[in-house]
Amino acid sequence: MAAKDDPIVIKKYANRRLYNTGTSTYVTLEDLAEMVKKGEEFTVQDAKTGDDITHPVLTQIIFELENKDGQNMLPIPFLRQLISFYGDQMQMIVPSFLEQSMIAFSKEQERFREQLKGAFGKTPIDMMKTPMKALEEQTRRNVEMFQNAMRMFTPFPSAGNNTATPAESPKKEEKSDDLQELKAQIAAMQRKLDTMS
Image (cartoon, rainbow, N blue to C red):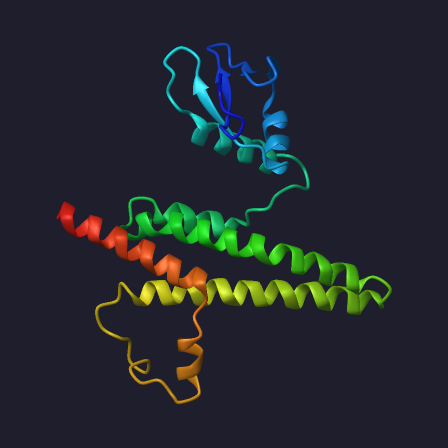
């Protein structure tokens, strides 16, 4: 019997049906999406081979959600950029960056919701300014984190960036834990790449 903290096993059969072994019921992709939203951990296994097929099933859920009217979250420029990274040297870095960005966004999510709550009762224009500022700030931090990560892979500093002004120095010293963790992951990936060469 599986431990309480073990992920639920979902079995996918040849007829494309999904079976939740935790509840002993058949489920749909929509049910799995709801499980994700509730924070329930699960893995999907091919019922015949036992292979872990969680990644393609989660990707299929995203595909289905993106095809529903009014639910598009992935902008076309983002999709184009993502596609362009496949087969590129940066392909190994992108998953860690996206994962760290989503972790950072999730941590900020509660603060963002509080700002949305605080925006109610104000004028419609004020209501739009507060969430947009928070979103712009989060986007700025993500871009900054990505740029810092990319600098680690640039052998020579670009022209104009070789000296920091005194005002910039304290900012560089105040790097977040997320950025430090991302750098450590990138360094580990670089060591793996070096051993492969």
